[in-house]
Length: 224
Image 1 (cartoon, rainbow, N blue to C red):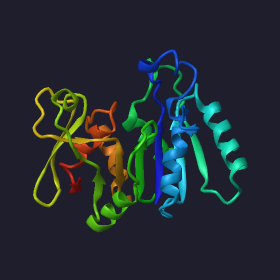
Image 2: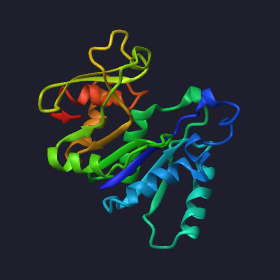
Image 3: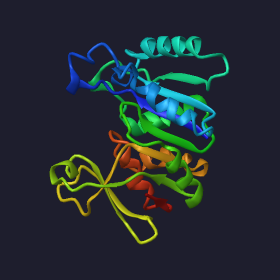
């Protein structure tokens, strides 16, 4: 399994803190946010390589982080490849779904793929999510029960059946159909990777990564 980390955004809501520095590399508790995520995933023993897709502006910063990380650890640490999507401003950004497709094509990714936003701190490990994916045998996403109606309006919302299969998903709905909110963590089956390009061609929204899941769950089983 490979892991694709989405880090091409410009985090404009955190300016000036992130105006010239990527949010996923902000120090929290003595180390960058990404280090917390990667260390947890490394402990699962399932990730063979990481791909960090970022913008042209922040590419040198991520490359410096990778170099320092490998030097600090050892040559045997899980490889990390930084992918420059070529954009240089928030106005010209590709959007998360196009960044996923860009990385798949640019790096020739052909494996089960864990995709996650690189700016999240978790209070739980990701091993159970990978185990869930193994058990279901389909593309899978996370969900959690959100009681706060205001937060539901800012989240991806899913409806599921009794087997956890997604019936529908909508990003930031005006009228949420359930209380099941979705954080930006996904595992795509290898055989579903070609559908990213098809979804884009079919008019799938591309700004939020969950928009692809909203399209994909109408094409093939997806569980949450």
